[in-house]
Length: 392
Ligand SMILES: [Zn+2]
Ligand SMILES: [Zn+2]
Image (cartoon, rainbow, N blue to C red):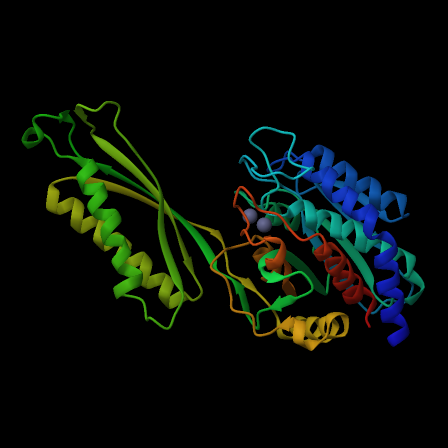
């Protein structure tokens, strides 16, 4: 099969420059959420150009392509997310975002370009293909309701036997792949608390019930959950990320709103955290004579890697970059991903694609305003997707 590997790498090399150009174009024109018309049009045109049967408007604005071969034993899906983030890019890149307040700081421009590149390589080597391949370009990975769930509702997993996705990963160098043995990414939850006290004059706090003070105590108490209630050998996060309340410096407001996120890897720890959060909230508000409202919801389940897919990725990745550059078992991350929804429906493999380059200072994590990738990772992403589709 060495010939097959050589053919894949040669084809990836021949398409590399044009795919880098597509990535830079996407990077300069970021789109957000489900509102990704130009990005989806680029993906759809790229598939149609290859003669791949293409559908648009799946999961509101997603694009799906089917490449089919006679007598295929199974169908493999490859997925890229397309959406950018509502944030400002900083730094000197020549291909910086041209749109104020929007930027591809999670690298989904790279994912989209990689899947377009993989489609070109797979189409070129179609005669060696033993499986049907479904190309999935998904909107709205970054916010709720998740684009993955919308695409599943529109039938994107029908007839799919395995699905693979990847994410650029600055903590690994370009030329490395990371793969987690079972859970790849945490379950993500969102909580929203409203603490209702009694408003009053800032100079007469004894006549008020100050929700700002109660809110601050609650935020501090929350930090003891992971520190003192969760087994130190386990992984969990409780973060408060938004606090809102008050209208002026001299008015004690009647309520504050606090929002945050909980990240967990197992059901017992999730239950511990949920229980402690509500107990603390009930206790602290009762102690001060205030009341509360708590809304708690799951944003995304944990992303699960199935053994059969992990084994396939390990074998393929070792062929591509050598076993020393395949980091396994890669530690699961407390970030989350709506790829999780696919992984709960069909056997799935989610790969951390090294995109860092310490020597060139490319080290910033996703969602940092100066995030970037070593574009060599595009080659390795294309090669991995193509090799998973074609086998090596
Ligand atoms: Zn992100
Ligand atoms: Zn992302």
